[in-house]
Image (tube, rainbow, N blue to C red):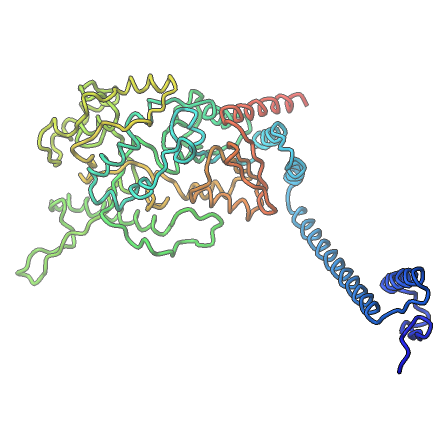
Length: 532
């Protein structure tokens, strides 16, 4: 029978370490743990046995210590690699951008609004390209209901009805049951006024040394109605259209499922350049053919290449159709919409027959054209119908000034004839980007110019947007890829999260307060630069 293994009869294992080598930290930790275990056993009972289970436990502990050291070494190596990569990227960036990013990281937790505005003011006055992208939150202070939020008009019916497909089914029903219900004539235009946020953006564009551009998702036209005069025609793009303007809708959509495009490698892609090019080429071809038809005195709707003489062996075919200029290139003002009575209703004019100054100016000019037009009506007075108990626009405007939201009640205005194009006499839709349309569908949206502005901008400033459309998605994705600074003027629920790839500075609060604060910061910075 073998005697139990004890400390007294254990043989010391020969050391595998060379005689000249010094003990490693790993061996020292093992010896320390072994000595502590040995002392505890000897203090409790000098004759206690050192079992094999205790020896196995110490071996596992030694293995665990070794794995932890290897993990620490790997983490140190990764940290060094990340530091080297960050140093390389920082060397390629200008000094002002490095300093500004570092200041943003230091303020990421305490959100110093004043310091953020001062930094943005320095950039605006330094002639660096700054792009403002504004949303419905900017116009909410003017009384216009946003699509989303507490008082938003967003619903499933808007997503379903605001499409070309639904418009083509029945344009008259589309206007009466959908468009005039959610976008009545008194819900935009001259019935509302720009607020301090609109005024502040126009002031920023006029700052000395400023290179400010504006892309707005709003269709209310308030940016161009500010008291502060600014070059909005060259410095602003209405990406989603403008209420009060109209456009032709093609009878069918071609190759909507095709993803091929010209210059697919461009950094910012909002619309299809190929589809835009094809549509413009078709219009130019139709224009040349129409001119040739006039010269040869052919029928207006007959194609120059169609043959109708069957005796000569030719088979007649339908004439080729070409886009109308209001379909892709130009917008139709409301005073040009046919019939003129429908245009008056869509303009929000009292149906008693009191015309606005716009219609007065156009009445003499359009008399001949309206008389000779080919649209058909049952009677001149049947083109519109308005409930006699409906509230007049002036009354609605007064209620708006008192704080009443003019979109709270259903409109009572409806029309008995769809609005028609003055050029091709087809039903026209509002100049607003529908959900099944692309930014390339009409020249008004200027998608190529938008792509250029987003790519050239060094700082992108979002104002009152919900980040729920493709335009904001493209701008944010480009900011991530190019490591551009992003400012977000929004309410608490609209804050963006700053990540390793997206450097965001949230300026939380009412834009009627925060944007004028930015203007003041620019003025103070300009005075400070003048005294240096």
